[in-house]
Image (cartoon, rainbow, N blue to C red):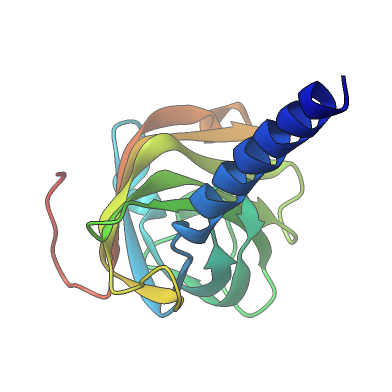
Length: 180
């Protein structure tokens, strides 16, 4: 009976050890810098913007908050005001990095008007984030050539002309980009 207990215990330790080894193959990836978002459909072109944000050490298991350091509309239209502190921005990202360096994931980004109450622009991409990472199993990588595609929605509780939806593309640090 003692031999059976020892064999079962040894098998359990072996299985747990294998589980831990799979964690060592996780590649973490971070991103920062300027991203340009282009809205398509609805009143989309009037909502294009550039933003700067950081995401630190994302392993893809849970969405990580964006540390948004800059934001500006190219043309905010009638639904958002101009000037500093005219809106607040929040978001999250998930970056899954394969051993080959290919990155996939998702992103949410929300812009809420503070000077024109009730207007909220939300960009959502569940699995539309792609790029490459230079990370390894022992070092965190940096995302490059990042592209995000998804849907956007502008909702207003005070102005029905500020309700619209469409698709978007957001590119990391490039002046032009195309969907993957």
